Image (cartoon, rainbow, N blue to C red; front, side, top):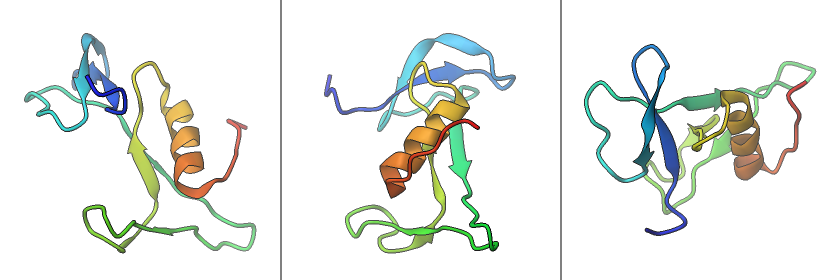
Length: 95
């Protein structure tokens, strides 16, 4: 398997782990889920940080907030911190 493929934990509708993995670009079965985070960054004067999608992605050059799927073994907070860093370069902590 391509080591660059994202691996996600599979969950049921009550956020219970199902004990197996899901893989990006593979069909997710009905009634099975993975966790996705959205990150909204506000400046001290109330401005909101948005980013522009890359030209080679779906919805090219559209504006969006930071977000994405958490990876296998991550908590939602860890995934949010990682996604924010990957997409913006910002480094934050849980606090």
